[in-house]
Length: 194
View 1 (cartoon, one colour):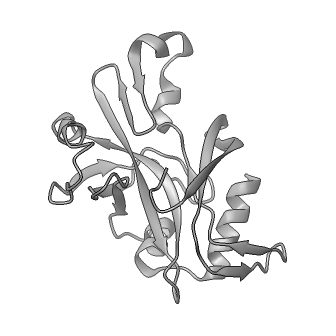
View 2 (tube, rainbow, N blue to C red):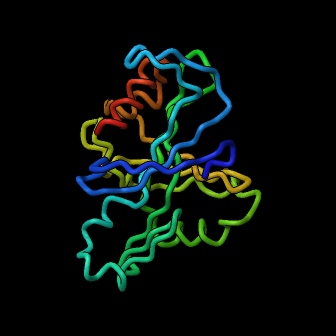
């Protein structure tokens, strides 16, 4: 759960790679928005989170118990592939809010253990940043799997900030340039209906 809000759990069928995954949203104390897509009033912007990295689904079901270590923030596959969960935040222009994707990124073994060793350290933002590959498919965008990222640890137990390498990919452009409130609400509706 993001420390700045309350969380609830939603079941997003077929949201990531055709598999049923659990997602959660963070409802923060934010201004209310009149949505042009559904005419409803929204309090804050809903966030969407993948509960496991996409490569998890490549492990045969019968091998997952033996080969996969999975928590809400870490995943290790076959003691060779290391993933952590972070927040890819897209600023919303003209306000202090942002649209958030809870995503997974791969880390090198060394960087994973640095992250793990400081998981409960209150002040850890001086560590890194770390290179990682985005390991979450976001079906609203062109292929997002294996986009280059940098992982920035944050203090006080807040999940790491995931920053995409600046490219012409739509997700990277939106993260670097920001989006309108209308686009943020469109993302909420697209993600909710996918």
